[in-house]
Length: 291
Image (cartoon, rainbow, N blue to C red; front, side, top):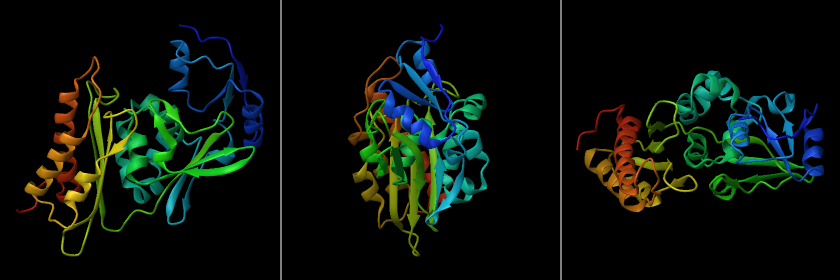
């Protein structure tokens, strides 16, 4: 299906891009176009103006930032996947990137584009939530920073104002004792997940869990964490019993949607199974600790 008519803008600077967004209320930002253009083809979105930021140098870098890393709005999934800064500075993101679509999609799609699209079945919003990332929104009025809980408001809905652009996502420094795993269940490789988890565990010197983040995608209208399951791990050895208890809490507390792809009960059960797998991998490289 052909795209509906629109006016194409290709600004030469970030300030010019922001000026176009401020001038045209029905404008949308496009970088890789892997989410917006299919929606336009299906008439699910009909912006009158497209603002192409894909070649703005101000938005094309991955850099160190306060001990962590910052990823600009024009950085593609493939670029981040190959980046040594991402591999060493954010192992959870590095684990999630290969799960996104197929290579052709990752060659064009962008990290910030996935976050701004806010599909609750996508991997990166859940990663941002697990890592307590900072999302930087920029407009002609200046910059403002948002937490993932503030940024993701609902399905395909964010706190971005019409004249704002998500210019950067900042991921905090990776804890020295942290380990991670990202698992998902999908009908076929490259499909959106029916349900998935991005897990991170830090350990104390005695081997007990010091902190845990269990962030789920495909389980609600926004990425979500199960605080009770995270708390159940803290101060305990990550053995089979501890992990099974956390997984049971996840299955009981999540309230995922029913749709044509899977029932709520199926997703609840699958979330528990993925929790066990992710925690086993994150804590013991796939082998349960001795009880």
